[in-house]
Image (cartoon, rainbow, N blue to C red; front, side):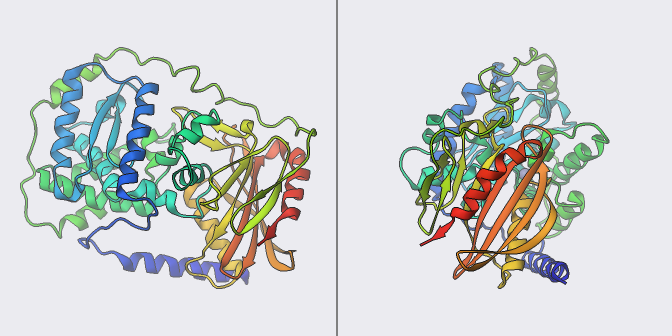
Length: 451
Ligand SMILES: [Zn+2]
């Protein structure tokens, strides 16, 4: 029965989502607690860090080519006039990413994989659309955000620069938070807006969808292109773009700079990319916890509406102002390459406001759905079971996913009914070492208090 009502809720959410936007309907940025200026500042700061960490292509002819195509697209009114910058980096994997407020980075492998300029332009138009629709900071704005985006939100709301706080704790940068995996809804929107931008710039919008489709089809069995893991397919992209195009005024789609063949030739001649900076990946193969420090005592952490105890040696990331806290020892944070950071073991705690559910059970499933949007490997392994926290009804749900250490991750999710929504505490650890973490996790659960 509980499962059934959840399915109903899902079906309802699905119908609502489908009803909200028809092809041709205007696209607007969603919920966001950042200002446009903060998007720009955050992106600028992060882009400077990225440039230090990656191998920027030195061939000016190539950089120019990317810029010419990018600027033509960025000039279209739908791009919303952000200070766009296009940078080609020497990196063989097929990927591209945009930072809030305008910086767009393209891997040389992506240019090498494109068959036509329109395909390449399609990726740029898609990235520009993520910027214009402010998907990065919109996702970071959601209070139910897990993992380190909370750090950024906290840093922005609290003291200091967005990235400096992360720098202070020796994490490199929290780029993961900004070039995180987009939701399928965001992907659909970026395709739709990207199609319009392409059309106005004179490129065939179908080339964008066909290129993404090609990447999906070519991956049979082997490691899928990195692009697809941060830009998950929202379904039949060609069909979606085609439907969108039917709402456009008739256009001429034959535009080309004429320099694509030269760009392809130059990209094939690039020197072998440098191996990733040692410093960057220092923590990448970090080992999971080999036992908790017993020295010292647990310390109470006070957030705005709740407090709980954390084990000795752990710290909090995320401002108290944001009310979203990541609590972990430094070794619990794993660098995932090119500055990304993931939570290997530790806790994330906050309040969650269900949008569709009134009761705790369905609210908890709604939260789980949000968590799964962020991490598609998460699966419920043990259905919610009843408990009490400070006299309030609570549920404990167990999940599994892929650990950033490799192997299986175990997650215990505590959800508690509160007058204004749900309080949650997500405890994360590698399956194999979970037993060692359990006493600390239990104590954390038992220490939760509300104000
Ligand atoms: Zn995307």
